[in-house]
Length: 124
Image (cartoon, rainbow, N blue to C red; front, top):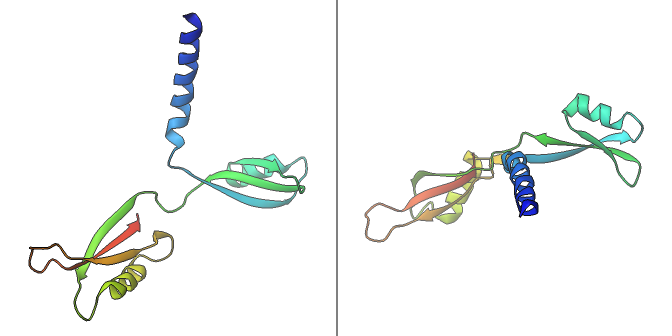
């Protein structure tokens, strides 16, 4: 019984220390030839962990600031004969470029007049 509670206690501690890291992005950057200062260079430049790979290259692994992992959506206007799904997609890509990775489509809700709207999905 004591062994069970010890394992439960260890599991709870691991869960506590790892639960805050779920949404973080991990980046990796090469810092050149690996030497005894690999870890120090990584800690000072990126606040990360320097690791020598199998090819003798110093790799810095660190938590990076990237695009948000939260997905958002927004309507950006009506779709029409002149602006259908392809046009909506292009408008969303233009409005939410790069790391926001904007994509869109026309959403028409049956039974609701003037509901054919361009809906964009993107990372926010």
